[in-house]
Length: 218
Image (spheres, rainbow, N blue to C red):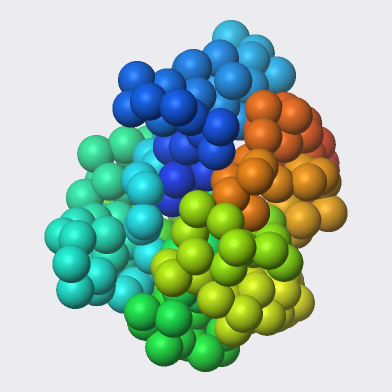
């Protein structure tokens, strides 16, 4: 059984932008992109979905504990071993004004996660997995008028648009795979942050195609 680790935030967790009560805050298992990806890959693969709402690449939230993706990641990776591929999709929470983080600083957090993956696996004597960096869908233009007004602002929109080019450059430099979610997911939900069911399906299909491409290259 080949294992793929998907490490991300609320869009990997499955946050439903149309929820009306806490019981439907999370999409059903079969709707989430990670579950759809597993179905596409077939019975020889297991997709380990490690999504957490408000997770950042490397920043500590002063209000909510446990949101620093760098802090938890080594435990997550080692507990999942062996893995053939790690898919990272983080950065949406990093663009919040709370962190005052330039896009270049968010990039460094993402790059550190990839490098940390390689180091941990080498030091433990494990095969180094392939790495796929997914730039999250850019925050929607009207985010300041929707549910997350005050959490995101205009700078969030602008920084989120800068991330794909930065992520692609670092992926190319390290020989990692890259995918821009904005190119495939279509329109975001009404909160301008989270994927629709259609977006989850399209992302799963795009990640699946990227995995096939990466396997052909290696």
